[in-house]
Length: 417
Image 1 (tube, rainbow, N blue to C red):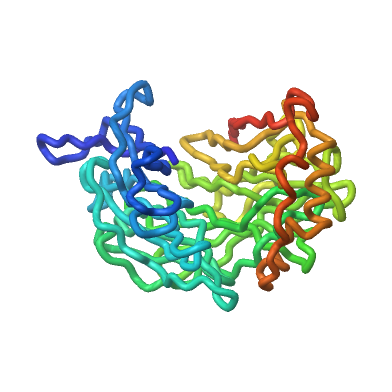
Image 2 (tube, rainbow, N blue to C red):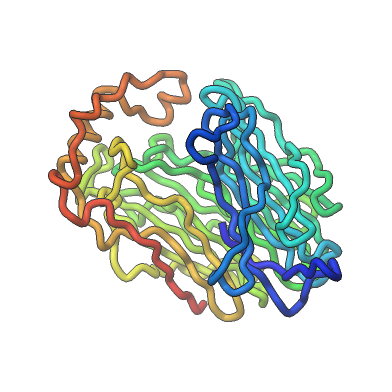
């Protein structure tokens, strides 16, 4: 996670309005043999650069991992709206996984008033319950408006929800609903990579604006072969759905997924997403599915979006890559979009330079048919997968696959709406 924020001067304890630093937030682990007793020691840390990434400070710890399973799904934001009374403040949120295996999943948050050098004691914004009746919480995002109000939003059961802070992150309201969410089927028919319906947040950066937008994907039929991308908006008093910029099916215009959202300094709302189509939704493997990237913009505060435009110059096949254990395809789920002035930049995973591997396809199909890998609905119903096949039965990519197998890239499409 990378954001730019106002530069902090420790001598004057003030933030610059002309100089900005880059802040990089990531997960971190203890060195082998130095773990303080925790099982999977993932911390949340941040580093700072004042020369656009040429050099970085050592990481400052936001959240430790002592006594829990691990921290994950982290997000960060810098308040750079000059009308905010908390100008320059940094905010972080994440999911804290507790128990084995992750039997509790609360959303946590923290803030920094000195350019990421130190961070406040983390606060818990949600319940921690995670069971068959009420699942956990993931996919948090953070933004601030022109009055300095902090919005932290996440997926919680059947709703996207949010909590607000009007005192710079010291305290928050109880979670309230933004709108209903119907998760994408995992995997989307015709593919085998993990996916989600986590939301994206964006705030209007103009001074004193209280407008914040949220976007996510809802499936629109039972088997998950169709879905729509929705946009909701608030001006500080409740949320309302304002647009559905994309909808489709795997045998039509494509199921949308992994969106990015931002607002330019002119108030234009920009949205990017990827969409998948499939020759045969009942199976998966090399040559079966195609992924393309699209974008659309709204000059009317999200009330109406232009017709989607394809922004990827070549299609991708999700079968060109796999998880490290080869048991599923892998498609990076960290797409994002940045807007500024008359342009926007959509950053997404692209596999056009990769190559599929029939041996891995066959291995993954075997795992699904044998029950070692199970689909989302069965997992949520409490069915456990069988013991995974022994490692020596898995393909060996260096000898069984093309040289380009596993090759995916981060691509950027420059948009001029």
